[in-house]
Image (tube, rainbow, N blue to C red; front, top):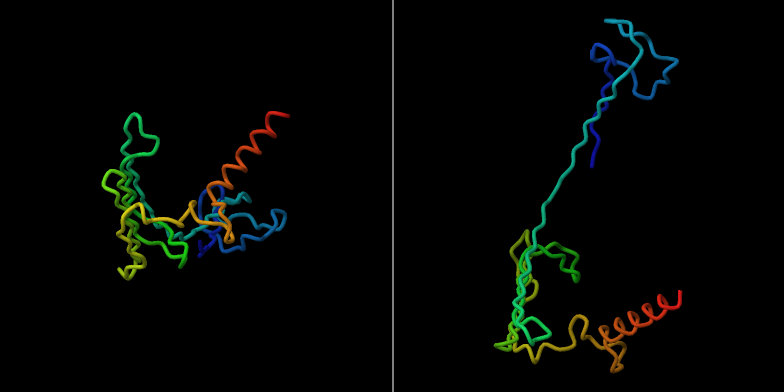
Length: 155
């Protein structure tokens, strides 16, 4: 956000005055038009807003713990580069397929493109191994969650 101007107006007649916005109230001169010493401070600010949109779809079925089909598309922060990118991801458990594509929003450059059997999509995200051990990020989160719940029960 950038502030470009601060304009001082008379509080009664709204006439623009040529005094500083930092002037203490005791030192203000009366308005030449109406004689009032009340002031209105008008500030203009310029803000750049970039809307980001992301949609998610999940197809669930009774008897299945995980969704049989998931889709994510829209704007997402590609953490590897820190750039906002277009994301398209499909996880199709029925057809054993994982597809993911990150495209730089500004240049159109493909940052990451994966199309592989879901069974081969391992060691990514929360299934990633920690420090060469057999422990995964998801199992550690689960452990932290259980410990937090146990603490809450004792309070």
